[in-house]
Amino acid sequence: MSLADGGGPAWVRASAPAKINLHLGVGPVRYDGFHPLATVYQAVGLLDEVTVAPAADWTVTVAGDERLALSDVPEDGTNIAVRAARLLAEHAGLDEPVSVRIDKGIPVAGGMAGGSADAAATLVACDALWQLGTPREELMLLAAELGSDVPFALVGGTAVGTGRGEVVVPAMVRGDYWWVVTGAAQGLSTPQVYGEFDVIAEGLGVGEPEIPDELMEALRAHDLEKLALSLHNDLEPAAIRLRPELSDVLATGIDETALGALVSGSGPSCLFLCSGREHAHQVAQSLRLAKAGDPVTVARGPVPGARVERFG
Ligand code: C5P
Image 1 (cartoon, rainbow, N blue to C red):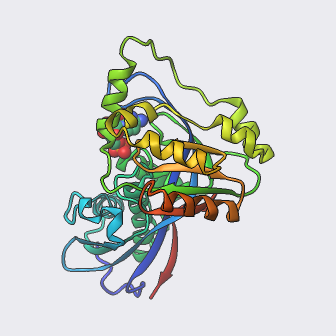
Image 2: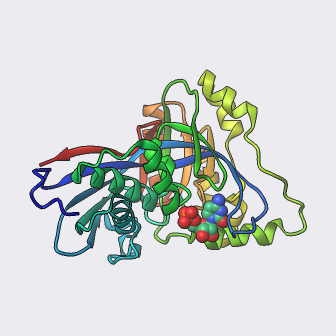
């Protein structure tokens, strides 16, 4: 099928948010190499933008702040955004190559699901470009095929994730949450961090992961003190084994009055819970002065999932 005379938009731009895990419970490795998760996701206001337009061939270009380790993003068919576009085309029975331009605002290989955000943004952008109106459930299935975190990048907000992270159920949450996010010059490989988790877990008798009630209560009540005590990431010891300096970054944030601190997902980004906007900017400035992580950014959550921003 061809859309050459279809009268659709010439291009579509979509955005998708970074995710953080307020709780990341990891179980013993499964038969398929993935780990069962019980996680609480929150989408925060660090966004990637993806622009798609019809082209002679499938191409991808990446732009953004050099401190985000852009050179680690492949600019070929292995890029998850191109894979997302091709998967949707195949699903719809189309043969319509697109050029994909990614403007990165999310740290690359930072434990914040930047690649998953690009995939989710590409799915909604191509769906609009090709005027498909793909049902939500079908987009969610395609998203899960692309990666464990991609369905959440479509949904956004705050949500409980199970399975390998791809089973996403929105959660009841009150109010806004203000975070400081620190980046690192070099990303961490997610499979490597899970591998390190396996080494640490061996012989410890790791059980099936669960969502702690206190965390969900803290989110329903917007109780920041309780939330700070409930933040937890089972991958944190593995990320710190691979990057020992992360424990200093976390300790510096707490010294500089953050309410709570943890490694984001598989790292090396770190998260600091603050009491509000002003406090977050104050903590961010202190972390910059202490040279604890670079770049240091303030982000608010929850924010919506992937959505079309503009088209022309
Ligand atoms: O699903 P995704 O492609 O994002 O996963 C990347 C890698 O992270 C997997 O190949 C696997 O090594 C690891 N992973 C895991 N358990 C999960 C999610 C990811 O072991 N639940």
